[in-house]
Length: 153
Ligand code: SF4
Image (cartoon, rainbow, N blue to C red):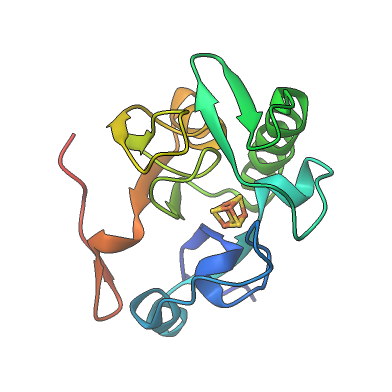
């Protein structure tokens, strides 16, 4: 019989997968501690969209996503968002914990598209799609000691 734990989608890099653009991870012990209370489904939208690892960093510019080589990689990001939403639906996830500031996973604040480190209000392609579909997205800084605090909305 299935237990009663909630299933939550999580950016795979937060769980220690080396899926970041630079081939590293963003392992977060507070997020890992959620394993005691929840089923966590790791997702990397950029890999699900067909991008290689490592890959050039990319940032949103309006509705597009442009990498540091100047290539328009929007289609990969849109596909990755679609695949992530499908997984959320398959697993019945109502919540996602996603890596902040990423052009895929960031929610509420992202880099401004100039690769200068400047941040602007906005969300990554996947975070936006999940929210449009009623999935609550939370950044990793809202996770403390294995509990999920709600971001201010
Ligand atoms: Fe992490 Fe999301 Fe970037 Fe993948 S797309 S490396 S999960 S922030």
